[in-house]
Length: 144
Image (cartoon, rainbow, N blue to C red; front, side, top):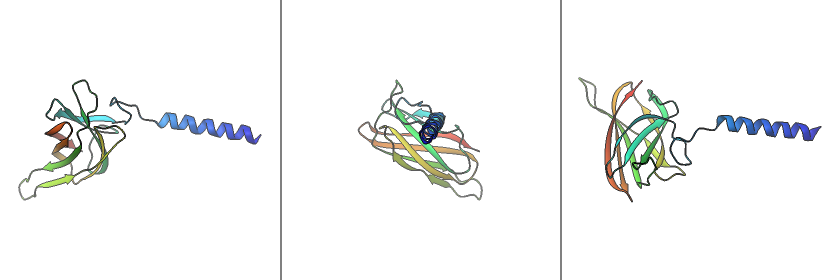
């Protein structure tokens, strides 16, 4: 009886884990979620910003930044940074909200956390320097 309950619980946990697993959309072992915006980043690379639902929102959130070659394969770029910039408007000062990036198990894919101060139009400023050279991208994004 105890063995049957244990096996049943083990199967339930395995089924739950399989159901919660994210789909790999990035060609690597790390899940990158749904694309928010992508653009050229120099050296024949594309930078793609994504998160779980494909929408940036005001407040704290997790994002993924992927650097890929023309075939979509992640490329190790070394040190990468991501800053969200909103220029000054009227009496409102310029805003810069830097994301804290960490590497993932897949070189070229970075996980980040950021706290966006307000809704509106921002520039996601991406830069990198390392084995793939150096490059930058400015991706216009909308924060809801």
